[in-house]
Length: 304
Image 1 (cartoon, rainbow, N blue to C red):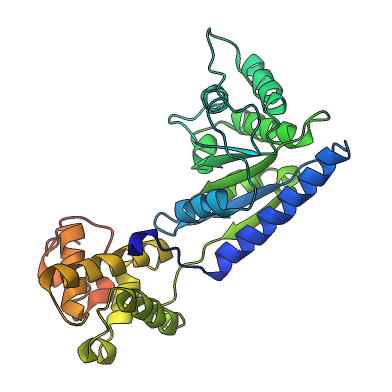
Image 2 (cartoon, rainbow, N blue to C red):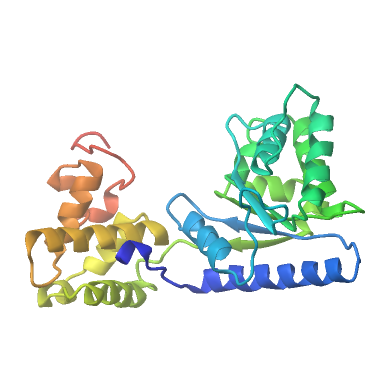
């Protein structure tokens, strides 16, 4: 039940508000037959920041948003993960598959993207979501990078059917957005910031308290008096999505052990289970926990 709960935060509200405004504008333009240049939203955050959860929430909870379904002619948005290795041709092919129009024979890159534009219009797609969008700019020559940018701009600038973009990815996505000022001015950037081990502690305590109360396992006195919230922020590498995961994992440990309250040892057990680290490299047990690389699996002393 806790894993299905969505923790609202200001960045999601910003994403939701911007998307609903762009969606409303596009629907009005379609209704009055006015083709105006579309815009893009870029959601940027590190691994574990909660990007995928935020996008999934956006797509499933936006009122009246038509998602692709088999046998359905029209949809408002098509969503896909950038294939790896990412080239313009492979991305175009992936979009055609997501549109339900897979290629039957080999075609040139230019021909593939002409088909993409045609089928986006055929299905009345208003927005195209590309996840892991930073990969499309990875290992590209300057000429190839410009081709990627020109292709993205051409989708938004199509005179017959402009399509808005939602690009989600890691901070490497900034390199793509800032490569061309003409692309940058068409994008509304939204970044998921890292948590602060000082400024966000009160919110972290409130969040953990909410989750534990939901399952009837309150914070124990030991936990409240300890610096567990600060350790939790570090254990999650200051990423909001990871913090939620570790919080729920800690509550799961408390449930399995039959505990009457949530304590720091439950978080320690959860982190040990996730990482396979020794006690000395567990941020919920070590005195100097801030030195620990929490992204490292099977941590052992002497392997710094």
